[in-house]
Length: 431
Ligand SMILES: Cc1ncc(COP(=O)(O)O)c(C=O)c1O
Image (tube, rainbow, N blue to C red; front, side):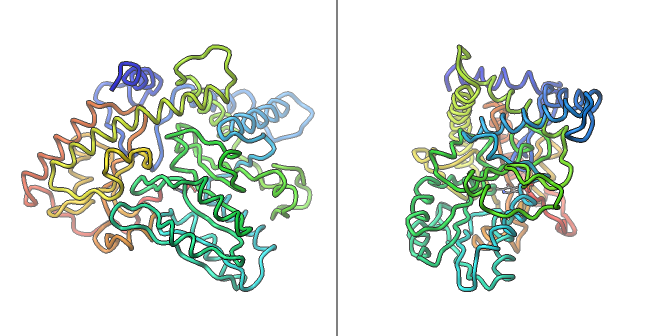
């Protein structure tokens, strides 16, 4: 790891009150939601205390609210390489996806087909399954290669036909970290005339996104996964946004992107999202005169490189422990994964491991994290899923080493030392 890389984490950590405190936990629960830098909380408080109002009024707090909304659309557009009119906000990715699926459903007819994948979080599966149920559409499932949890590309190609109207796939898996070749998949789907919906929720905190380069039609993400507040954001290519009819109330704007933003939004979350994106831009190695978009791309490239080193270190250590790691483990293939790892051990359930590691100060998720189809495919669903180690750019090599050492102790002490858990929690995490 180079000095520049370690200084990225050191610089980042100074911005996060929850991390900089002595004795703070090790946050490896990032795929479920990341920590928030001070400036995000400040922006939200500032909005709530000094600009809180509804939109389009003839008075200062309402005017400031309109500015906050505009700024958030511009910031999100910079993050995605889109234009501000192509980005809609909502409560979360799931709600936005259900909303869009309603609008797309108007254009689809019985016998039309939608592709979904076993690598996806259910938020990019269930909306399409339900739409298919309502409209008599056919769903084509694309499998994963169980050995390394990469998408079965040949299966994807085989599922495509002139009947395919939409292909829905993830940018990165929230369970095993696999990154899809989204550009190639988009091209393949476009070749048969299908639209493409990409779930970028888990990719957004780990690398640069360029919707134009990918060429996709829709792309969703969630600010609370990239150091912002709880909210969702959806890129809708402008021509689609203009043509599709949104499910909305009559007095609301017919303009893009506002027609997709049903009801009153969380304006404080928009203020926080702008601040989160500003924060990300500060991670760029050099500021210079670069635009925010350029700084964001440079920052996310640096984040990606740094996190690869964390992944390498973690994989190296896990290989020495009696655990099974799901997903890509080949150190030469790390460009195809984000630092999210699903792990199981013979002698302890994922919940037992999460509880025991929690006692040592590690925040870790266990369960299926709503990656239901994948957990079923891997045969893990009936046994409590897997322990998930999900890192972000503020995690450090020292934290990885401590994690490996604690996990090693727990596993070598044997199953008898892991407290029995009477019943598995009924509700698994969403993320
Ligand atoms: C890959 C992925 N897609 C979608 C979602 C759902 O996002 P939201 O909570 O914003 O609806 C999650 C949540 O963890 C996720 O990890």
